[in-house]
Length: 249
Length: 281
Image 1 (cartoon, chains in turn green, brown):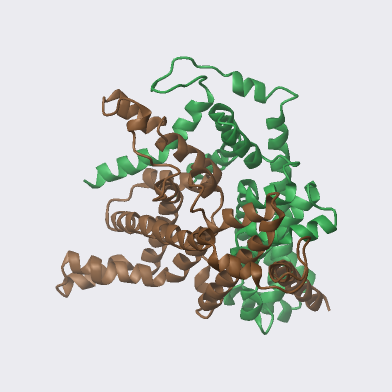
Image 2: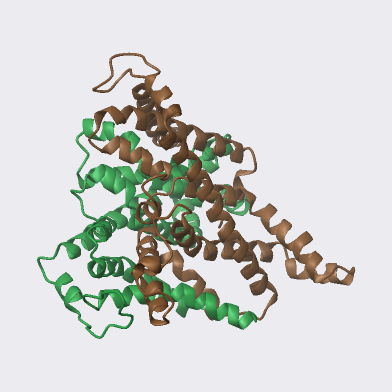
């Protein structure tokens, strides 16, 4: 019974992803065909041709997600240090929940006026800034779990033993925080990589990230190109997943 | 000095955009600003509360969020129980991680291609001679009961909740707890209903509420799988604010104010509890 449950749940989780791969390598898959024999790599080959917009969107998404993850992780770590050593740390920390928990698309729509006034709509810098406004608070929340009593005591001990602020930061805190820094980078990267709503509202369709392209193909009822676009979104993440699978559970 | 600067910058970054956005929407909804507005008016608010579409959107979002939570929590609890007390199945646990790497927009697209009248499920039904045309297939996407949305949320949330529950079960040493309960004469049914489920849900209550808030503001999945009316509150607001009907903009801002107030109120209630419980790491 238990084994059967594992198999069926595992199948239900894997099947949509297999269907996605299948959709990207068939053409004219019409109802009621179930198994289609007209396999083609045309969509993938076209994607990797130099003039294809999908590849440009992949690069844009990668650039945006990488910049957001890097800046949010760096600033998040430094600012969280000051917050967690602050006397009002709980009140300070609670501020981060509000921008993070509000729906990004509504947040973007409410801020759109200001973005228009400072000429940031439809620009890459506008999208980076808009995404950063709600991903940065998330990094603060994530790092708040790092600053436990043990870490705080270690820092105080380092000061007592004569370490400077710079030494304790570089030689104690950063090595200890490495797993958190990596986790925060990955999480912020994923949030930005998946982001559609705020990018659509602030980007006005001028900045084509992969989610924007995917939705465009879905709206055009082009499942094959939508599947290729979705595949490009999942592929780098699957690499991370495979790397994770290789590690001992 | 550096600490003061960092704290000031942090307060400004977290509060200023929200206050500016909220303030703009509030002023717009009361007619103080905006192209079509001519001064203070409660007209847009009255219109909002009289609009069946707007009120339906709000309640529909709440119902979808609650429905998605319930449909994800039940299988997650069962799976967490199986994985805690059963033989360790590492391959299955790794497969459970897969949905965490899939964007909501892709899940929406996949569910659409699974459940639509010409989708994979309908093709299987046709091959099995259960239906003779797509019209015979039940409406499972863009439907009134949000079946497609619930299925997509289940795909995304069920594995996540399972991992959260597994981590709680480990932290609370639930295996030892079961041994003690069994020694003291508790039946398996009583252990599940009176110890396992209440303990897990109690420890995860705030996190569950948080995910409820995320679902309340969900956008991509309802955009692909939802109906035109009633629609989720996020779609209602963005449609009113970004479409070209200038008369509707104030209504969109009024709804944005209602949404923001509801979210702020819920967060404030949640934050009254210990903040450290909120972070699932």
